[in-house]
Length: 201
Length: 216
Image (tube, rainbow over all chains, first blue to last red; front, side, top):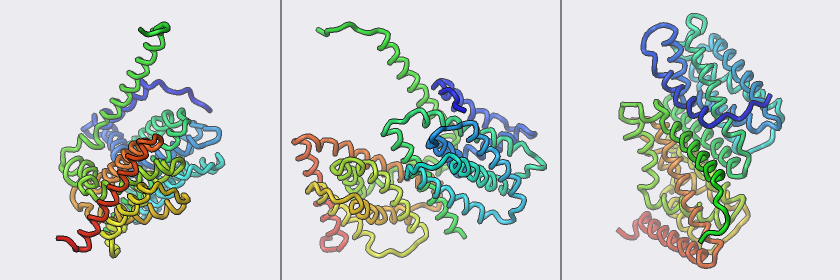
């Protein structure tokens, strides 16, 4: 389903309001959990880049379907968060996410045309791995307190649409190059974080 | 005296579009939490984003090589004009990773000096090898330049933002090289660009001499 292009002023409001809400709640309770989840998402490169990569892949679809893209991402995230109960150690998940981001970054950089179904699977896996890494964070327990997970998912959706609209409505040569540059930066930063993880093992 | 009618509607629409774009960019710049809202030292300051951005420009050997990549890309024209400046920071990160992991690589300083010489000669001579040859050369030199960044990456501060800083700074140096290289399409501009190549090559010879310890 094609959604209408947003007005720039709407995006501006979104970009200003989301961080304010994230930092607004200081007390205990579900608002605090919501803010925690949102803050973790906005402040962590691996979650931001997972959502950004999913958004950039959506822009590369032959027939972009934003709604299905968002559904695939969210489904993967929720399954990933609950799937983290099966994980006992954090490090393999973290390294796997970094390798996945390197792969996605290089894929976006290469500008290869992929079938829409493959892109859907990639979005789902992005969400799943991001959810898995979110779920293994020590204080995250979605069954006991679902509010951080809710914050994580909600802010991810907001970021997904915030990235997707500007990138999708610009199809000229230099703007496609900008998307390639974004892919190279995703891969580069993921490599650096993976290197630090390996160094500290 | 200007001829033709002044189109108020188009001007007003253009002005409104510019205001909207400025508003959008301003809202991005107001995003808290990622950089400016952190009070601890390291995110923006020492060991952080700005520190990483400053690191490549404090070494003349890095600066001339990065600019030379942009100049050469402009001479090679599309698609090299955008492939080389994208590939260089990415492969430079591979070099940085090797530096972080403390993988011993001999002759890095020689490689850095050689990069200025080779790239300077390529620009001065307006050489246009096949894209894969240019890419391999760039890749080799990128690893040489990235390695010291990885070694120098601080354990304090925020290493990730430091890395992002030097990648951004490198990209901006490439863009400056490309911008200068766009003069190449004019006759006088070609002379200027090729002269810059000679200067870069000469700088590389100086660094090579200093590295070999011939001159103290």
